[in-house]
Image (cartoon, rainbow, N blue to C red):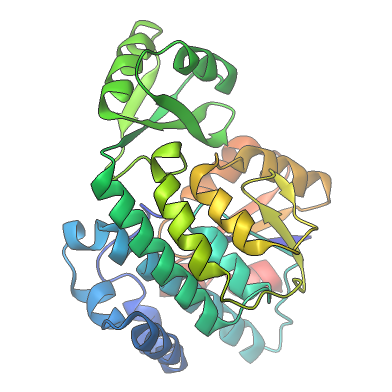
Length: 311
């Protein structure tokens, strides 16, 4: 069973996807569609931005989504050119990556996924400006211990990304992050502050969730053509009757990625392919699951693995 995974915000880097666009010109249609809907030149944003410009939420979210779809499209073309069937039995994404998963699973159209990400990135950017927040990754401690420390903090801080048994991301006010960082340091845990603009997946994003919900209600959602795994539930999603509410909840809810991985393996998944910039999810799969294959496809070099994966 093959799972297609999609990168999250923070994986972006300047010029990502450019070599694939050059080698697979048909992917230019995705840049055109994204640029038309977002009202900005996405080629310029992806290829010419500085790291600081690209890290801005309004740039990073559409750019990572776009690059993920470009990598996915190129992989299909390369595999089919070799007369190898391209198949995947399920999809999952980490936070922002869920939007690429929405598109490739058939839940929304390519045009609508860019409409969704336009609304989401703008709403989250505005919320981050209004509510100062921060995030940090905590390593070498169990999620349960991290939850316990956060629950005792005087300032607001909560676990928001359950990435692996030994890596959990926390979010909250800067004061909350600083407060628990001192506690974690005493416990010999490693804490790495993340270069993000806000406290994503926490209650500090509630205004973004409310605004995004109104935009999402205008989008047409369908049932997926493959298994779709959700960050919110931590398992396969089977009820698609109110996706606007679920996606709005996603903005303020923890990403239960480690639970998703366990659920996918329990369902028979043994091969995981991450599409998009970086290989963060590939690393999480390898650290969390045993007896599985994990790959990333982000450029022409990694695209060469396609025949091995699907052949």
